[in-house]
Amino acid sequence: MKLLIVNNLTVELPELDKALANYSYDMIDSSEINKSGFKKYDKIILSGGHIFNVLYPNKTFQNEAKIIMEFKKPLLGICLGFQLICKIYGAHVEQLKEYEYGLLKINKVQEDIMLQGMPNSFYVFESHHNSVKSVGKKLIPLAVSKQGIEIVRHVSKPIWGTQFHPEHFGKKSIGRKLINNFIDFGK
Image 1: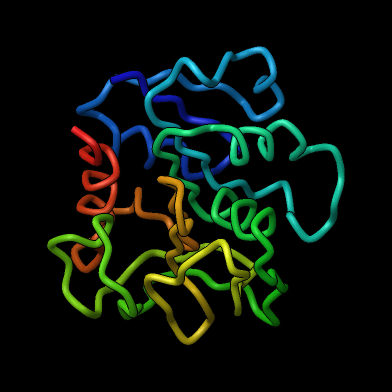
Image 2: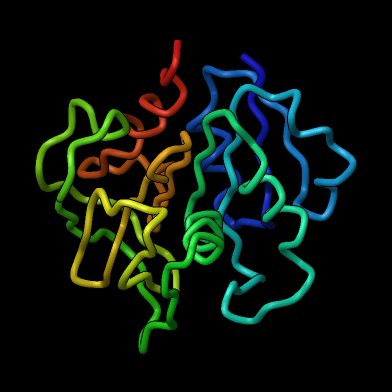
């Protein structure tokens, strides 16, 4: 399996590296996407990012949007990657009044292969200042919290997104299981 990580300059990179310790992968910065030949990969993960904000449109996300629209294989967006997926497919992304940081309880609202083996309620690690309250016709909410939608799936493509950081494996977080479900999808 050829896995690509698109790094949106996330501060969570060490955690993501630990989460993927059992897998080999290539990593590129989001600014290098057009040079990467992303279609040669079997799966792509779009990382979070602390510098960029999807609420302020600019050319920063042009190439990443191309991946989201054109990649036909499994894709997972984390935090900023999730917000990009949501924005591209018509969801409403808004800024929270306060920065969300720490463990947050979320609840499944729809069964999905990505949530296989997980309880109906579980804790995840949050670190973001945007939220998705509603999705368009192209996305299905899979889990929600008091802040909004936490996990989505595209209606017909193998695209998922998590508002939270599954690369954090605290004692209460289910992140490892979610990442393994993504990596194992389609094997």
